[in-house]
Image (cartoon, rainbow, N blue to C red):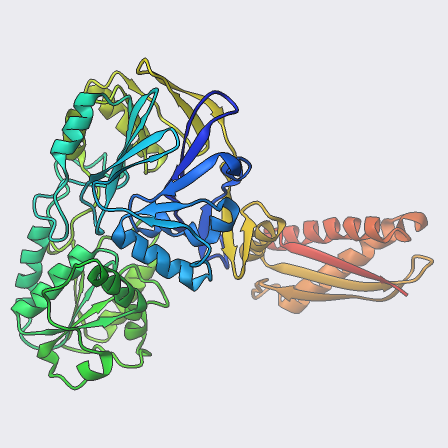
Length: 539
């Protein structure tokens, strides 16, 4: 969920650029929410001084919020061809294509935005066209790496441009803002070329039955490796899942995946012998609506897997997705499908740098200040310590919202804090993470709801009720739902009768007193405090 701001100029007169604008995904703590993104209110309030947005690459956590937030920002966007294709596709989906000023720039471009002189630097990552950005200003230069790794055989695109980074380092880098994802992992992240060789071997070991490879659709290098594994073993490739078609279309539009056989459709694949087909599927993280989950559940329209077939998970388990992935794999195993993961064969490598690669980057760039980003708090602190071990003079460990002043003397410090809330995509609405609706929904998900209605006269007497409705409330052998509801009704009546005659006629006050009493009684019986709604109707 990356959104980085760079500002230059005297206090109150800065000009700003945004680097990346991404999303993360909802989980059990955000029921009903599919996407979460940064709240851009700080820069939205300074929109007149916002020059533009530059995207480092096309992963959702770096560009997925563009279409959602652009109307708040209304700034031009710069991106390289592959990223620009996917941005256009998303803008078209949201009816913004004709409104947004999108500049497509070549790899290794250098261009000016106000006081910022920007140079794109070719890196390697698990998606085409990842770029670092050297940001030059009259006060000095910073290097924003984005996501990267060092891979001598990346399959797609060029290798990381160490010469360009070294030249930037020789020129003088005040600060490097750098990826921390794999800072705890020793050595190197591994090469996509090695994954390709292993996939060819693994697919070749399965002479009968269908083979499916589950991978991140954005990892076009992995798609290339999977396609080569299929073709080397006499299998045709069928894409399964909307994201697979979208990413391969983007790749072909910029000249990638040109020397592969044409893909075959799902219906055509059904007529081929099982040993002649390889399905390339979305859903490696157990996403319930993705292609592989529907196949495992047996409700995919065209594709089925059964005894004697094989699924290769050429991806890692993203923390938080374990339950969904294991459930998916159990469903496949129940159907007799053989499962292969990165735990048993070397069929996945990370797209982020391990410690040896980080050390190499610092040797190239020679920054005076290290500012770790892209990781949990423990990653950022470890990265700062590692940078100091590498003789970087200064390191600043930041939290979301921290404003860092980078000074021309090669020092930096946190000087302020900007709002750093989150926005939730809730159906067709974009709502603040702290909105009452989200708090209520979390409470409902945790402990259910008690709704109680009663009719009272103008004199403060109960005319009807209390009537109780329970949602999400359990029962056991000693306390049935009827018993629970009766207890709530009795406590509501007692609480109402305890009020003075004057307070009974104050509906708002009476509702609140009854609500508190009912909630306490529910907690006494159940051990949890449900969401309680009281409706008093005057008759």
